[in-house]
Length: 132
Image (cartoon, rainbow, N blue to C red):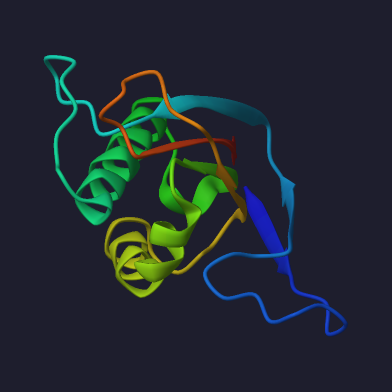
């Protein structure tokens, strides 16, 4: 897969995401929404950063099982129950992202939702990847 990340000069600077990602590859992987569930189906972590790290780990586990790597991610949507809290932790969440997924940022969006499937969940990530 080749990925070209595009951040046009007329848009605000892209920090922790890319404005557009043009990919060439042969396999699309659609990743289901992942929260901070452990192997027993229980939400782990009591803070947003803890839950974000587990949700991202779960997303990347699914991606790797499909044969992909974090750099294959083309799009990720983050659903947060509190965008103000997400913004307040943005630097820490960015560090977690870089530690687990690197610096090849996909096109991303953060959307505030009233609640997620599991009431204890504060954040959910889904996305898709393009594999070679």
